[in-house]
Image (cartoon, rainbow, N blue to C red; front, side, top):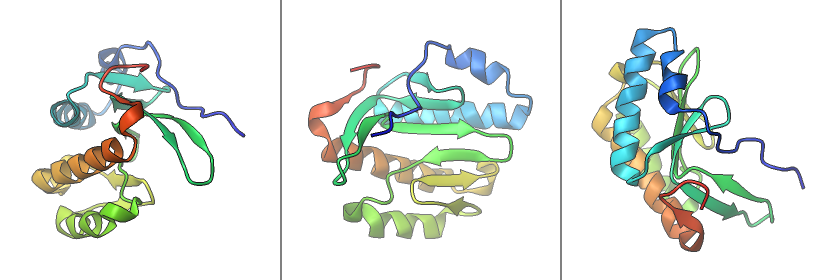
Length: 151
């Protein structure tokens, strides 16, 4: 089985953010950090070279694939913000889709929400989406969840 490539690093989050050239993307990153810190109760940490994550969870899929992930996370990519969500969980799928319909300008994949800038979306709806995802992950994997790094 392939090993998960995205792991926590010791790079300071502020060091990473300071290297983002676009000032709007830097500002949006700070808004997302504040939001995810509030929802998760965890401090931001770098996961791989470009993902800012909060908390820690060891998951095991029905397929047997397992790994470690952040409970809430995003990446300020060059083209857009990638916000990682658990909308593919069947138990929250309907709520997730209803919130996406109210969000504003975005596109989405199975576990990712893509937003060019936060001003394009309803920030309160985005916060509800992140909280829904966070709560569903904690409920699904309660024994392996930690607000601390490297549980």
